[in-house]
Image (cartoon, rainbow, N blue to C red; front, side):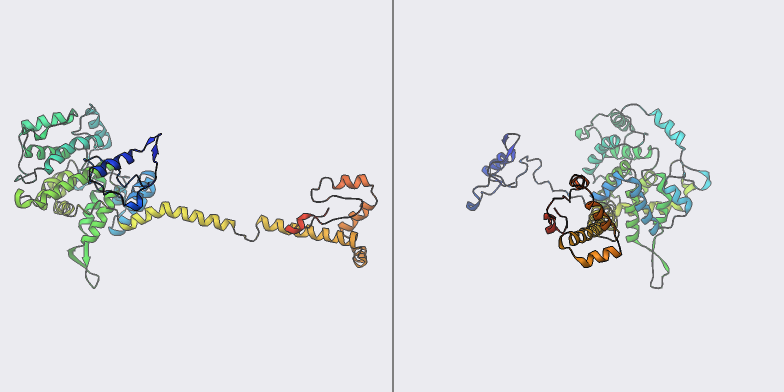
Length: 447
C-alpha cells in the first residue's frame, strides 16, 4: 500500500487522508526521512470506536466452509469420528442422524412432527419468539437478556430466585412484539430477566441440544479412563469427553449452536462469580439441564438414573465451555485438505497427463513420421543417388514405393503434378528433388 499517489474512484485515497490526520494528532509516528515518499501508513480506520479491536482469524474457516457447501460430506466426517469415541448401536446412531424418533423408557417421548408443526402454526404471528422454533431473529431478541445479565453476575441467587411475574409478562410481551427493551432503566430486576431466559428455553419445541443428541450425551457421560492393564476405571476421561462434545456441537443446527455458545459463556462467567452469587457450576446445571438436555414431555421419574448423568454432563459443559466450540485439529486438517489438497492432486494429475506414457497418440504419430521418412529416403536413394544395389533389391522384393515409381515414370508431367498437388510436404520439379527445410526439425520431406 506504499505509493506516491493512491487513488480510489478518481479521488485521493481515503487512507491517505486518514494517515495524515492520524499523524497530525500524534497517533502515528512521523515517517522516517528515508521514506519521505510514502504517503500512507498502516492506518486502516481512524474511528475511535473501532480502535483497539483485535484482528480475528478463524481457524475453523475450512470447517465452516465444508459445513455450508457440502453438509453431507461434513456430517459423515464428524459422525464417523463420534462413533470412534462412543459406542452407538444401530438405533441410537439412527436417532443421532435423525432417521428415527427418540424413544424413552415408560413410553414417553417427544411430540411428533405433526404436533410440533401444529404448535408452530399457532405462534405464526410476527415477532413471537416464545414457544416457537429457534431462529436467528429470536436469538437476537433474547441476546438483550443475556447482555444485561453479563453486567449483573454478582446478584445472589441469580437463576435460582424467581422474579416478579408482572414484570416478566411485560418483558415477554415486548420481546414477542420485537421491540427493543431498556433494561437499564431500573424498571426490571436481574431475577426478572434471568427467570425469563429460563422460561424462553423451557418453551422451545425441543431441548437446546435437540432430541437427536440425547443418547449421545448419555454415552459421553460414561467415558472413563483405563488403567495400565486396560481395565475401565471410575475416573472420567475429560479429554475424550471434551473431544466428543466438540464433535457433537459441530452437527447441531446453527441457531442451536449459536445460542448454546452464548448461554454456556454466560453460565461460565456466572460460576466464576460464585463467591458473590452463590451459584456454582453444578447449581447452575440443576437450573438449566431440564431445558438444555432433558427431552420434552418427560418427568424425573421417566429419566430415573439418567438424571445424575445429565446434571453432571451439564455442569461439565459449563466448566469447559471455553474449549467446546473449537473443531478438533484433525477435523480442521481434513476440511483444509478437502479444498487445498484437491487442488494439489489436480495439479499433479495435470503434470502426469503431460508426461509421455506408452500407447499415447503422440508417440504413435512419431512412429508414423519415422515410417514415412524411411520411405522417402528410399525414394531419394533410388531417384537421386541411383543406387543399383537398392534397385536390385527392390526388383527382387518389390515394394509399394517401387510400384509407385514405376507408375510415375509412365505418367505425364501434368499428371505427376496433379498427383502430388494434394500433399503439402512434396512438390515435383522436372529437374531434381530437394530436401525441405523441415529436415532441420527432424522431418525429412523434399521439394
